[in-house]
Image (cartoon, rainbow, N blue to C red; front, side):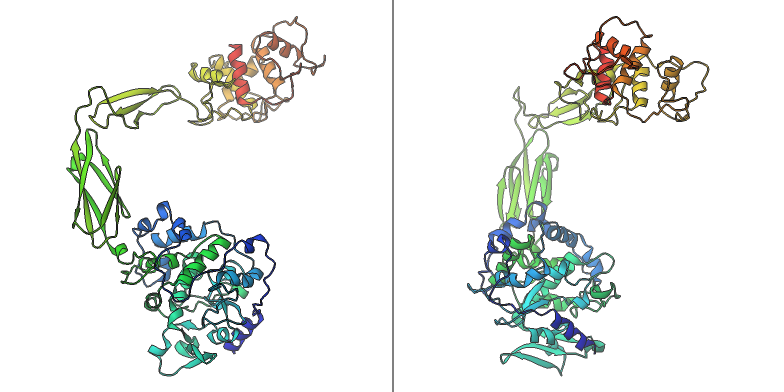
Length: 609
């Protein structure tokens, strides 16, 4: 019954791959059909493949990351190498096609020799097809989303072949079982299977020419779409069932063993068609199956030694080799190894004076300034980098990039020391403190901010160690605190009680508000509230200044058109204008209700000082 339900489920999703492509717009028409040849072993990587692996994802760097030889797929999946490959494949510019689009895209990805009729996956023949998930959906937490519509995973398959394959576990039927069934397509054997293997979990074997494709697809799905909670971790080991509905994973293994997985990968090397398909899929959805470009990674991820076999990169054996390096003499400098690159850093007074490779013919060494690239590795080897003392510099010192010997603070400058890379002479220079967001010396608030920083006590210490936040709104609490500090931070009177319910005893601004209230600089926003976190308006700021100056008489006329005679802060604003504390905003306007920024408040204080 279970096998019948599986067949029905697959038949419901079967669609005929006709001659007319779906209308997919420019995304499809711009893609070049796969030009590769099936079962023609790939002897070199494509340009697209080489460009995909850069920086920390170069194969030489990846090959130095540890995999895991554990029999638990979840432990292997969590290894540093597996994590790096997962990041590379899933953080590319991935745009998966919709599930409905995938069938027609096979005319691009699975084309061969110029024909737009795709090759059927298990048989290499052509004809009516449906989508086939190589990792059965009954074994994975997916249906028609994510990996369920990932072109690296889906392949065009004959409906009858796919029905016979069902969701059986991949394995070596003919080698291990005496009785089994054979599925023929056009009188050619395509599958060998037994449905009652391992308590009716079933076992199915594909043609030798397809086994490597299967292994590399399974490793891609497991690496990219496995989950830390056990989802899709049933690659070669039965797991607990997880998920629900169409995304139920019954937890049964997908291939009989890790040994079988690697055996299939070795038996069927990557061909030019499989590599061309990788290029085509990348042009559609953005990422690549790394196990096709570098099948060597199949063994490295699983903690096994790479066999001697043909691969597109030709690195099968050299990636097994170990590169080490030593400095000669040790006090002359340091050497570090990253993948197949050795970087030498001479100490002051020394320079690089050549190298020696042991064994002599173990690799080809190319020196690029202080980096040595080792290629064509034939054996484990050690690169000895020679350092020699440099002649005295006289006055022609070559200074290094320098190191900060004393970090600048908001009160004291720092110091940066430079060392001559030739003779070891040392010089130093002062590093002035700078807020990271107050660097422009032409900014109107540049001088006010650093004036306030150097006052005693400092009027401002910034919003953190490295930022002043000039564009941030100045609150009423900040405004009064700035004014209080500018007045020398006087202690409030003996009466420390305060009527404002929103000024707690622990607040940094409590003394400032007490002082301002006692001095009648602020009266609060009501009888009970000061509103410390409310924005300070331009009118309020001028009023604070005017009251702090003991409310001087104002005789000048009002220059601003947006102040009426009843404006509470009118006298304060006219006084501030006459003292050149403010020039207004523009066009004879003061904008009394606009909020002050921290930069504006510090500038008002600077002008008033």
